[in-house]
Image (cartoon, rainbow, N blue to C red; front, top):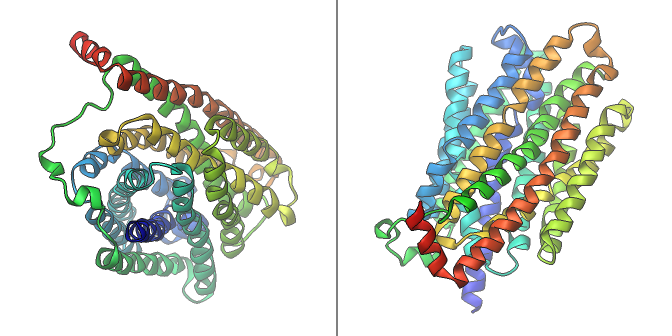
Length: 425
């Protein structure tokens, strides 16, 4: 029993480190938008923000196929390979001589990152069939650390180098983060334990189990994924919009912008395990609480004076990021183990794919504000109002997840109903 506990804890710890690297790459470019624009001689900041959108689309769109791999093959190998590709993409981005090369590089980075969540989430849910929310919350600490380090390091490093080398200062931190990912990939592959259940099963020869046995379950699932994509839209939007808002409306430099944005994720390192554990005793009510409070904080953020910008960001991150382990645990508990990789893959393909449009959409919106309006905090009020509404609408995904779990359990108790449903489809 002790050996199994050690195995689970070691796997969870190493998975959290990989989680950190996965999300470092998603936010490292946030304080670098204007440097990238000037160095690559882009037409506007919208092209800079679109690099993040393209990377996130490449990250989310293949998630279903990543889920198929996670249900069939070694999750350890998939996780190590994914981080290596992610790191190589960032090294390529640092060496890009044109916007098209930069786009190709972020696509490679996104494809590598797409392997993480379907493999890691299904693995942890399998290892922790009880206390799933708490385990995913602990895994989520890695994301919080990555989100914290990414903008701080990139902003600090670029700000230090800019007086010496000008706009190309953004390249150095991007290259260094890519190289660190390659090194961590090798360390993980060497020291991580294989999933003991999967290691002794010939998963590649198993018959494919349908994700959902009835059209009604498919409809419920797609509705849940769509509504939670609105949560992700707000999440991506708060990072990218915050970078533009702080630098244009309040005159922050890249270092201060990165430090302020990172406050979101400092709070998340506390809240994800806490709310994940609390939600094991009531997922819906805790998720309603954290997303409801987060929506209020999104609305009030642009009204705060510049010197207090970190305060609403801290509390927003505390509540908003706490929703992720709760929703992931609810989804994993709603479906059988054999399909969790694919289910989560489709879930984040829809949710993250639509949500990742936020950096591009909001970047274009800010660009169209023009001068001198973009220097006035009040010009940003309508944009933050839209993000508030999308976050509140995301709460409609909760009853759909609850209905999936209820129907799946009924089918487990009455398998003949599932067989009859398959004959009619």
